[in-house]
Length: 208
Image 1 (tube, rainbow, N blue to C red):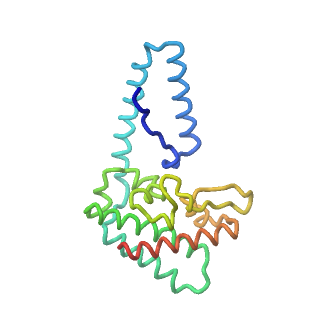
Image 2: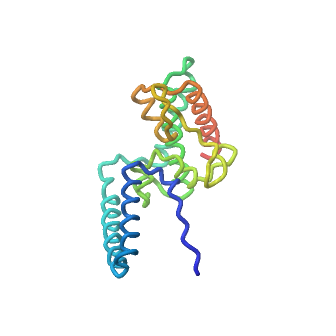
Image 3: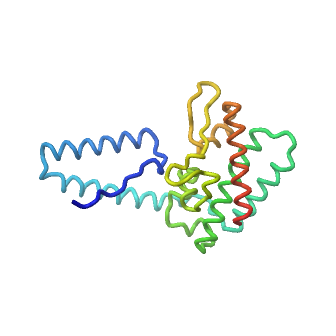
């Protein structure tokens, strides 16, 4: 019996709606296998066709994005970091700029390594659309040291943060939303998160 293909959904940072859709799809396949096994191949063909259509739509949905060159992103990293460095009284605005500095740094390094001139040359559109803030994707793409993010695939050193109002826990990729909209984080979580982002900025400086 051949080995089953590896499945690791944790790297994809899927939302609840997507997870429910996957669960429904799996349940439908399971139901067909139990009751109408002859229809499974036809159903999977239909699923594959839907995936192809979605991939095409995603591939053409970035026409309204403002693309940046490797040089633009590098300049943005240093500009954001420069403002944060000279600011004596750090605020959520500084934290937000630190977050965006990390994102710009990641993209600039990735483009440089792949010998691409700008984000318009990126074929994997998930890297520049809604998943652009999915740091876990960038950690895997860039191979950040385990001392910062932990070992792949768990990345155990990546901090989560809780909101002060209800103690709900959120992925680091959502931190920019909290800072942008002024939603308070747990004080201790925020402190650790900012220190962690700063350590990544130090790594980015060495890699640029």
